[in-house]
Image (tube, rainbow, N blue to C red):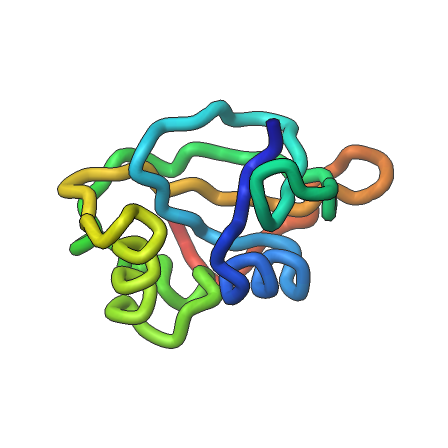
Amino acid sequence: MGIIFQSRKALNFLLENGFVYTFRARQRKTGRDWVTDRRGGWKLANVYIQLIGSMGVESLETFEECSGFNSVKEWIDEIKRLNKGKLPHVGFLYLVELEEADGVTLRHGGVTL
C-alpha cells in the first residue's frame, strides 16, 4: 500500500517541487514506495520516504515552508482534520521525495536539517 496524501495542498507541493515534509500520527514504513490521493486510488508517482523523527506539532515551524501549507496553524488544522478532529501529542515527520525514472530521488532544498 502506498503513502496516501488526502491533503491536496501537501500532494500538490510534492508533485510540483519534488519533495514535501509530512506529519503522521502513526509510524509508517520508510524507503521506496508510491503515492496516491486516496485509499484504493491509482499510483500517482514513485517516492522515497525518510523518517526525520518523532516530534510534537510545536516543532513543525522549521519545516512549514516545505509542507505545502501557508502557516503552521493551517498545517495543524489539517492534521486535526485528517485525525478525526484530534491533534496527536506526538507524531512522526517524514520527508517524501519523488523518484526519477531511474530510481534516483530528486534532491530537496529549502530546509537545513
